[in-house]
Length: 196
Image 1: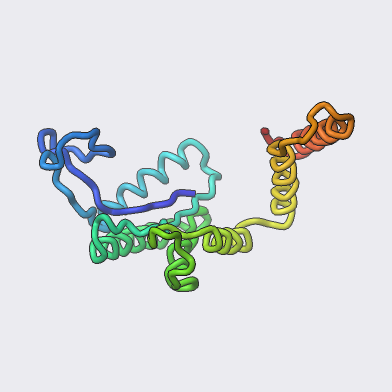
Image 2: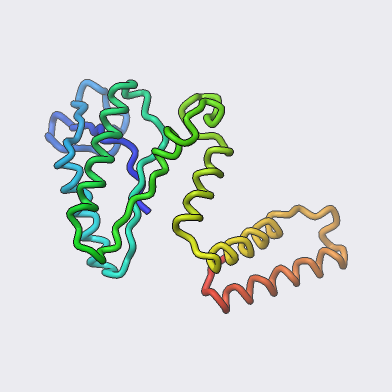
């Protein structure tokens, strides 16, 4: 899963290179630029090529972050998201059938389906837990089969058990609980090759 957040980038004036982090260098040493759709397409195609060279059977799922980058400004955020969306869809349309490259609409679910500030945290930028759960449910329905969902529930139960803080850790009851938990872990590891 590759989630894109913004099409805005910073160019270090001294070297004329795009940078991933400004490292506390004064802002005046950078130019802020909006990547064109074509530039994003080339970048995504390079990413896909690298991944497919490593594992040709990999399924790649693109999504656009529903978090708005309002520090860039309202209009600039919309421009950025539009460029990302257009580039992703252009890449998907240009790929051959069977390439296993897809798009999941987390951005659209947040803006068009939920579309209400009650689904945002107090900062009015980030999705709240209800929104996250809703988007996750939509993702599960679209991408996970029943077997995977069942395994996830088992893993979740085990993780909750591991996080449990006992009232009396030395009690026989708690020791039996830990043994049962370890047994469940071993069964899952053996059946599904899951790491804990």
